[in-house]
Image (tube, rainbow, N blue to C red):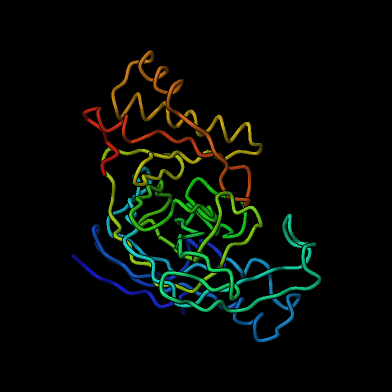
Length: 300
């Protein structure tokens, strides 16, 4: 099994299908991505926010090329470990729904003590590390890491992208080209302030080609749920997209009949919002129900 480290010097503000690969490995490679916190460090040093392009706040590291990955396949990414190296409390004046809460832009490092982030002498927040931006290169050109969310990934901002979770992404170009970045030391579901506790980190993943899965958008398996990421021009469209993917998987991968799939969706499927990069809805199915079925093509 190959092990590769990609240093944070290989950072980019786009998912770039024309970039030179930072590393190349066979299916099954274990890779450590060092992620960047460069814009937050600059803000903390006094660089004016107006001098920093907003897109630079979602830097990703990569790309990792996976030998033999081809369009039409899915790439499986097992998130093994996220080690937080620095964490930042960042507030951007006039940005996001809480942009008027403070009188000026603030960015300061948070002390790390054990498994907690020290916000103040009386407020400590537990580490809940997750990947904000995870995606593949598009078939042609470049995709923004800021907005929107793409069928091949991008600025998902999901706490579910944490150690122990598995993500499947639809491959768009040969060798897939995986990028990882925008790590959060902690973030709420839906990223309600449009910013989390931002971080520099080392992210270790296992990357493989996924046989038997033909996902058309990101799919996530957590400790308790199988999640289908729906995207669209509206919340209603994203909701429909997520539901269609869930029903397709129940039919094609789990072998359920239409009445069985309908009964499971009626009783067990739930929706929740994704991050703020665009209309995103997550359709979630409990593994406690799915794991009783044989023949699943979405393995643990």
